Length: 311
Image (cartoon, rainbow, N blue to C red; front, side, top):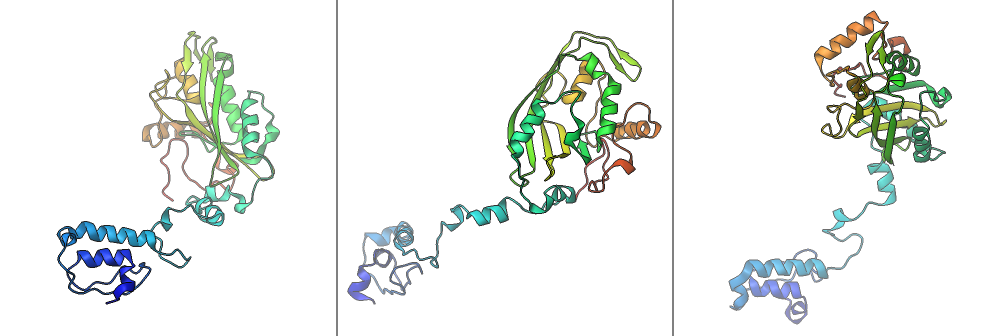
C-alpha cells in the first residue's frame, strides 16, 4: 500500500523488505503511515533485527527538522544563555546562609577574581582591617564561626608570628563560583621554618628548625556588593597525604610543626567537648565567637569541631 511513491522512502522500503507483517513507519518518517503486506522472501528477512535498526537510523537522519519535530539529540544540545543563567548557574542554595551570600541575585560591580587575588597576595599579620565587613565570619573545618576581633586575638596569643618568621603561602587556581559571582575559591600551600620559640598562652614550644610543608588546601572569600569581605572559608585539605604535617593545613600545620599536635577533625566529639570547655573558661583564645558577636545571617548552630547540619 503506497505504491511507487512509498518506494521512494528508504526507511519504509527497508522495513518492508525486512518484516513479514503489516507495519507502520516511525512517526519521524518523511512519508507517514505507509503500510506493507506480505513482502516477498529475501535476504533481508534473514537479518530482520539489523535491517530494522538500520531503517530506524535512516529514518532519524532523513527526517525533516522543524522546531516542533522530534529531535532525539535535543538533550545533548547546549542550553541557551537564558537557561544557563537561570537554571544552571543560580539554583537556590539548600543552606540559607549561602543563599543569603548571593545578595538577592545581584551582580558585582567589580572584578571579584582580581580583587581576591590582590587581597590574598597582600595578606600579612598587619592587614588593613577596613577591608572586612562588620558582619564578617571565618569558618574552618574545626574553627569558627569567628569574627575579626576574636580571630586576631587567638592568632596573637599562639605566638605564630615569632615562631615562624619566614612563612610563605603559595596561592594559585583562583576561580569564581559559577553559582555565586561574589565568591572566589583558591588553593594554598604553606611553607615555614620553626626558627623561633612558640609561646602559646604561656606554654613554650622551643624552636626546632623543622621545615614545614602543608598539604594543598582550599580557601574561599565572599565579598559584599560594597566590596567588603563578609565570609572566609579556610583550610579544607585537598590531599591529606601531601606535605609533612600529617594532613594538617594552615594554622594547624604550624602548630603541628612546633610540637602542638592536635588530632582535630570535624565531628570529633572528644575534641568538640574540649573546645567547649575552653570556650567557657576563656583566657586562651577562642575557637568561635560569643553568640552575641555572631551576625544574624550565620544561622548554623555548629560550632568548632561540631558535626555539620543537614539542611
